[in-house]
Image (cartoon, rainbow, N blue to C red; front, side, top):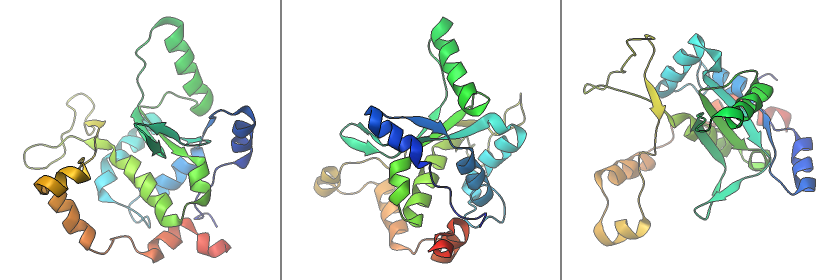
Length: 213
């Protein structure tokens, strides 16, 4: 039963509804599940694209933290179900101290990256929807590569150089309709025509939903 995917606590969602606000809580169980299934060699959902994250976490477990949000929020008229951010404090003085304290109260440390997931969505999402959302956010933790596609390592730390990555493809349907698809769009279409690499068997083994139905 250790493989059952983590579900958010319902009490903080209920509290948020009573307060008519969005509440957030730390999600250490989600982090542990992601490490076991996505970031560990031999994990049911392991993806070598994220090996740099695993290496950075192995060196420093404070590199990444996860949190549940009681509900989604709207940005540019779109519902945001997950968000990966590089934790930075642009303020100084007490503002910075307050924000750092909040992180330490939640996680016991100030992470380099924070992934926040909509708990209300995940309560009802299928295993495939849940896994796709988690992996989407992991892909935002990018790694620098040289002209040959090899990972660039820091001369100072000896670890992969990382950055907050944007999406591979960002385009309007209307532009493609009127002017045709760019090379990036064409590549995405070709990938979409293929069967997913991750099978239902792998998902079931890592999420365990079928085991508790």
